[in-house]
Amino acid sequence: MGILYFILAIILYAILSPLGMIYGLLVNAKGTNNKFIRFAECIDRAGNVLCPELFNRYLLKDSKHLFGDGRETISSVIGRNVLAGTLSPFGKRINGLLDKVKKNHSVENIGF
Image 1 (cartoon, rainbow, N blue to C red):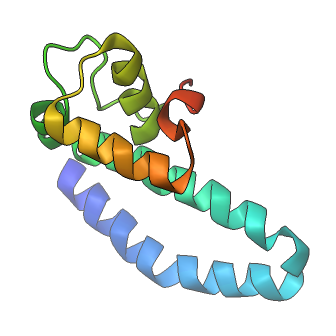
Image 2 (spheres, rainbow, N blue to C red; image 1 turned 180 degrees about the vertical axis):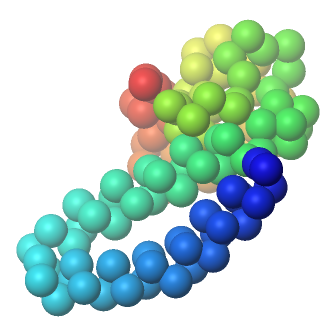
């Protein structure tokens, strides 16, 4: 049943989200930037839920702060592990990329 729900959700998302975004842009152009920021955060949280096995294995080493909680973003988990000193070498490179976009991005985005 879970896989069926997942497939249905993907189909509805693929059909409805472009329509909703276009409609939102036409009706409320002022709120566009905020909408894109909130949407990016949703994608970030979804990635945290969909990829914890991959991220926990390759981005962390001996950590108590694991990926997989949908209330937390990928950046938040990385930030917790920056402070704990438990990022793998590859995790440190990912954090370095985030720092190029915004200095201390992961640490500043810790939280639920």
